[in-house]
Figure 1 (cartoon, rainbow, N blue to C red):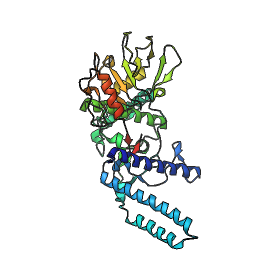
Figure 2: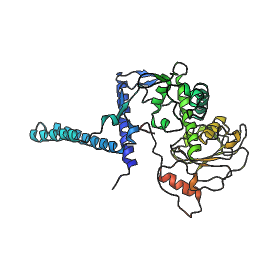
Figure 3: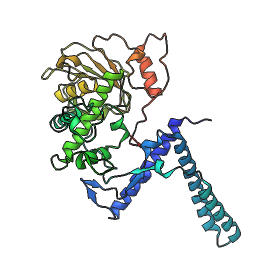
Figure 4: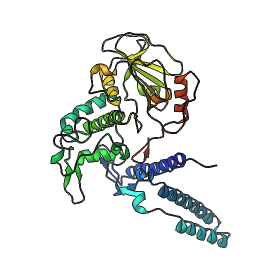
Length: 387
């Protein structure tokens, strides 16, 4: 049986992530490393370069085989220790086999497997990727970042030419290739070129940690919308920004509480009735103060965050009205339906993880979309870490 690249590669990345996270937890528990920006600090100058391994499959395979050899060598070493008192020759042979396995393993190039790390490399965003955080981050970005990065994040702001290095396009792969903790450090501490010259100022003295994390949430959301405008799809997965919803006048609950179920989010501007579908949980975004039956939210931050994801935030407030979004069981946005849509087709599937095609001639576009989403779940790797 041939294991698809996505399966064994994600298993390898999960192993690397778990090993490093557990090591950091152990060092922090033993007080061998302290805190920085409210979370345990990574004490080493290097970390595993998962973001490189997802590109260089040859080196990833070599690392996987080498780790397998090292694991087998460890097992042989344990067995040798158990036999040493009674069968010394057998134990010695096992030790030699273990050493040979480690020495002869096809170890990959160190510069490919390892990359520079910063103290916040393993920090996790505390915001929960909420709609409110996205909107707060938008205000931070407009005040402190847009002058160089541009209002659309594409790096063409009025101050871009004055910088030592041209600002990157935040709608490109940058935000998805780097871990959130690395992005946080770059904003807080600034960036420098190889000669040590500053290419981006440090904002840690002007912005609090929460403001920086919110700015990262906004940049992810806007980047997804800008990519959708340019390419007609979401080339990298984006989650549903979390917000509160009330169902039939009950207590509020968060979008995240429906994780494990498929969601349909419809942005309405009136009280039009929506047909329910038992295969999805239908949520309605209504105008502020407008009551409606079912599960609804009139949170303006939710509308703004989804307008950013859809790439229509700068068009007109009414541009979102009538749009529909479908999120899979993992909370990832997979489809967007334009206003006036009466049926679903394969072109509406904007976030794809495989090459499967929708079944033809079924007459049930929604069912075909759901089948593909369930068969091709998102296995998202960001900065080499599986999310």
